[in-house]
Each structure stands twice: as C-alpha cells, then as structure tokens.
Amino acid sequence: MNLVLRIWNQRPDIGRALRACVIALALPFAALAQAQTMPPGAKQPSDFPRAKLTAGMYVIDAAVAANDADREQGLMYRTKLGANEGMLFMFNENAVHCFWMKNTLIPLSIAFIRADGTITDIDEMQAETENNHCPRNNGVYALEMPKGWFAAKGIKPGTQIKGLPRMQ
Image (cartoon, one colour):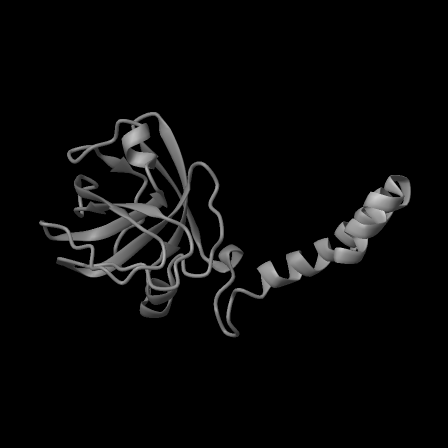
C-alpha cells in the first residue's frame, strides 16, 4: 500500500488506477474470509428450517432451531441479519432457558415466549460475551432478533407471537 501512496503522490492518474486494481483484487479475498467464519461442520444459515411469524403487524422471517445441535449453534458466526430476520429456539420443556453470546458476532435482542405465544421477557445482548441472559419466567420458545428490534417496533412483554411451530 505504501507503493500505491508514493505513486499516488507522484502520478495521481497512475496511482488511482493502481489503487483501483489493489481494491479489485482484495474484494474476492474479503468475501472468502467472510465465508470462512463458519467453522467446518457448522450449519449454513440457509440450511435451517424457516417459520413465518407475526408480532402485531410485523412479519418475522425466523430460522428455527428445534434440536440440541441447532440450538447450540444458533446465530453463532453470522455477520448480519435482515431487518425482520431472526432465529426461533424451540424447547421440549417449559422451563427457564438461558442464553449467551459466545461466538455470536452481532448484537441481538431476545424475547422469551410461553407455549401460548405470549412474550414474557425481553433482553438485550452484546456480541461475543458470555453473560447469561435468563428470563424471569418459564417458557418454551425464545426469539432472537437484531438488537433493538423489539423496542423499535413497540413490542413488549404481553405481546403475542403468532405462527409459532407446534412442539413435537
């Protein structure tokens, strides 16, 4: 890059062309590095089953984690989520299910939900932390969304989430 800067200062026209070439060559490697953040054996985001949920007038595109392996991975290693995209965790028992953010690269908000679809608790979670996030109430679902999503939409405890897949 120092060579580019020296050429830029001496011959701006060649420097611009050289800089554009360096950037063009670097972009595919940046995309490859992004793709390699998933460790071998990790499930790709497109491999999770999906559910279309609603919270009031808002439609949520949720990946579904309904088994131990999927719940363990969750949104780990993801670098982005769509505006109304999240992950729904399903549990086989009505209990307090705690979450943490190890290897989770994006900050998230989480809603803890009873079997009837009622949100009981909402918490904000910072990326790449190992703090426990536990609801005060038992539940069978948890829904992770981009950080601040619930607050921005005016969704609070007591709100009903519709379209939840049935427990097996």
